Every structure is written in C-alpha cells, then in structure tokens.
Image 1 (cartoon, rainbow, N blue to C red):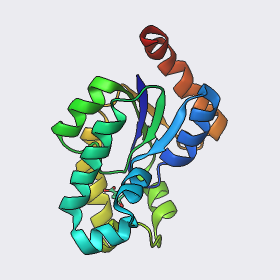
Image 2 (image 1 turned 30 degrees about the horizontal axis):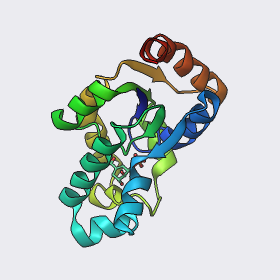
Image 3 (image 1 turned 120 degrees about the vertical axis):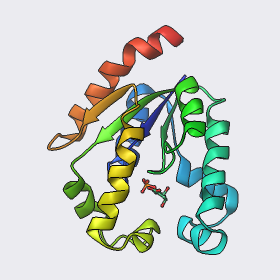
Image 4 (image 1 turned 180 degrees about the vertical axis):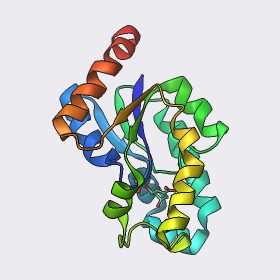
Length: 172
Ligand code: S3P
C-alpha cells in the first residue's frame, strides 16, 4: 500500500512527502512531476497548450499507475482528489492524509508563484478562497486530517507516521 498526501496548493505536500518517504524508506513521487516527465512539458505549459481538462486526464492516468506500486509516498496536485473517480483509486490503494492549513497561510505561501497556473484562473484572494472552500469536503474524506498550522516539519511527519502505522503494518 501507499500513502497519498492531499491538500490545497501550498499545504506542504512535496516538502513533507519527501521527508516522510525518507524516514519510512519508501519511494517519493509527486503527481505533477510524473505528468511533466510523461508529457515532457511543464505544468503551466500543459495548462496553456492543452488545457485543464487534458491536465486532469493526465492526473488520473498517473494516479492509476502509482496505485499499482507499493511503498510510495505520493504528493498529489491540489486538484487531484476532486471527484469520485480519483477518490475510488485513492481509497483503494492509498492511506490518505489531508494536510490542513488556514487559507490565509496557504494564500501567503502561493501568491505570486509563476508555476501555479490556477493563480491566473483565480487571480483574486476571494476567488481562490472560493476554490479552496469548494474543495474542502473532498479533502476531508481523507483517512486522517493533520492540522499543519504552526507545527514544525518533524512534528507533522511524526504525527503522520503514528497515524499511518496501523494501516501499513497490517498491509505489509
Ligand atoms: C493544482 C495544483 C498544483 C498543480 C496544478 C493544479 C490545483 O499542484 O497540480 O497547478 O488544481 O490545485 P500543487 O497543489 O502541488 O501546487
């Protein structure tokens, strides 16, 4: 089985995922990285040239591939857990961890980042907050919710390992 980190842009999925994988001795993968490799194109380029619908198909296809693997920590793109199709795969093959943070904190982390094409689609703080709010119910379907606000990286990782342990020790 695998672990999937989910949450809005800026929630620390990649940073936490890399360190978590190292501590568990598992492989770290991230859905955006896999898509870029497959398409030989950056995420903003995929959005600009082929559109968001195409990008979402790529997300589903890499998720399906990773689901076949074992002992992977997957950092998912912020939109990947939106929709029942991807959730079916997540539920079946991953222990899912929602990295929850206050919207204002997330906004500060992501604002002005050129590698996030959705910031062009939702250019104001209010629009982005609407997007965040529309996704929360999907994120909250995760097996565990870890509140990352004001917490050190080590503590967040410790909490994930503690909560996930019964799951992965049963599966091995
Ligand atoms: C997206 C989040 C991004 C990336 C793409 C779309 C989203 O990943 O997949 O720009 O829909 O929230 P991060 O959450 O890693 O920034």
